[in-house]
Image 1 (cartoon, rainbow, N blue to C red):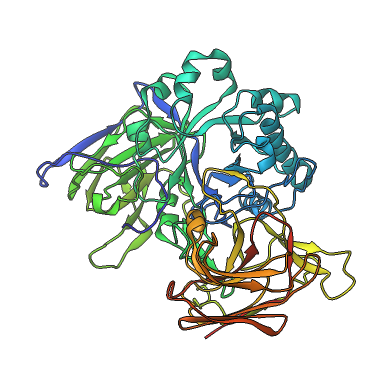
Image 2 (image 1 turned 135 degrees about the vertical axis):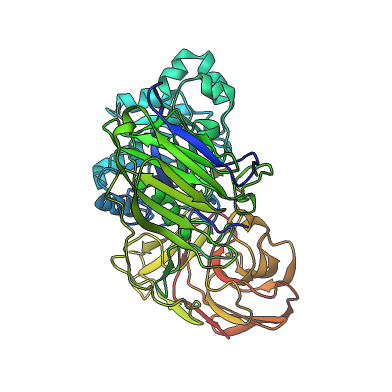
Amino acid sequence: EAPRGAPLVFLLLSLTLDTGECEDYVLDDKGGLGRVFDGIGGLSGGGVSEGDFPNFGASLHILKVEIGGDAQTTDGTEPSHMHYEDDENYFRGYEWWLMKEAKKRNPNITLIGLPWAFPGWVGRGKNWPYDFPDVTASYVVNWILGAKQYHDLDIQYVGVGIRLLRYTLDKQGLEHVRIVASDNLWEPIALSVLKDPELSAAIDVLGAHYPGTNTVLDALKSQKPLWSSEDYSTFNDENYVNGFMTSTIAWNLIASYYEDLPFGRDGLMTAEEPWSNNYVVESPIWITAHTTQFTQPGWTYLQTVGHLAQGGSYVALTDGKGNLTVVIETMTHDHSICIRPPLLPFNVTAQNATFHLNGSFASIKELRVWRSQFNFQSKKPAFFEKLGPIKVSVTLNLQEDEVYTITTVTTGLKGSYPNPPPSAPFPKVYKDDFDNKNPPFSEAPNFADQTGVFEYYINLTDPGPHVFTLRQTITQMPITWATDADQTISVIGDWHWQNVTVTCVFIAARVDKGGQSIRSARGVFYWVFADGTYKVTNDLAGQTVLAEGLSGTRAYGWHTLTLKVQGQYASGLLNGYPLWKNAVVLTPKNGWAAIGTNSFELAQFDNFAVEAE
């Protein structure tokens, strides 16, 4: 698989000609211009991200965030601003912080919100959020209002495909907020827009997730802006050349989640070790910069864009004030396989290409050149290198797997940064008593909620040692496209751990799966119940029982559980005394530690500890 990377907006396919020939390409605005460019962005959602924004690195134009819905949405859960209908809190999660940090770096960055899931109450008892559109519209609008009231953030777009949303936005004075629909698939929304003038008037942008490089005829007929509103973080994307898509938003922004969860390291950059502060500036940052540092939303594509004769593609954009930026790529099929759906086979070979500037661009005398070379064979890549200025016309000797930018814009910059701290495994001895009186976020560090929401909680009814705790808050199955487990669970630690001792309630070890696969997770799960019983299972669903019996546990009391897994045997203590021992655990051989509950129910946790060998 190709290294993970940022979608470009332009890219490839093609024909094969004799490599000795030099092909001519004309860049001209005499016959008019193409569509307006809406920008390149990154998406923080799915419980994954936390952020580069201008003329330093990726210099993103757009930040799209998940409107948390208390549900598993790929690699974790993000908390809702309304756990329940009568509950509102606009300080949960990290997306508010991320948007404010983005605005500090780029005050002009476009902010977009999208609910990937919804709290269960929105469906009024159904696992579907759109049977009561007034409820759903109010829920989304409340988030937009909260962003402004509590964080002074202006949300400019929202992705929800319901007609009533436009009315609800306008009623609240949010006429400036535009709607992206369906922010999922091209159809049936594109056909509906053509047939329904009222719906068409309510929707500003047609957006699709993972469209490959093509749109559909109905979307083109609509004459609306077309966006790849969620795309894989990949190097190669012909979104404009093939599909006239004027914006591409990459999932995910920064890979800030355990690597062994689904889609590990699939961000524009990686920061998955908060305990070590290590981070990796991946190549997608610099590939994205080839476009973002030399264009801005509001620029316009030329009509003279397309495929290169021997594979690859090029696009050209102008600000209408004399500036011109051309982005050229020659990514091969073997290094473009992360696109969804997969591209058909194509060939790319070395070639000479001459670009002639006509029309209003004929007066340009000099262009700046930036180049990235992947050099997969030598494994010595060179990204975002500034070459000497060139005179026009421009002839380039293009090799395989290269990206060039030729531009009149002079402000490009490859930002420098200190070497990050070295990578380190998760600490083998880790404790958290959750006694944080002013936490920066509502969730505890290093825990990755996979089903349910585990938040800091002040227990004012307990005058003893358990005032500051962590609480699982969700009591109803949320509405989500992914598959939540029937149990709540938050994982922590190192997926490669084998022999561990965990203390808390409930606790688990060797948890082998998370994210979209959490429902089928296996491991060693130690449960105690309010009816005075306990159970030890080999799976989260509780179907494979390793041990069970009486525990004497009751609700509204604190109990200390200790789980020890050594080789193929597991044993458990309750309040410091042995409760069960020598349960045979043949698989899995390794996995995370975890806390959680047997169902969607309130539960508090304190004094978590784990020790791995």
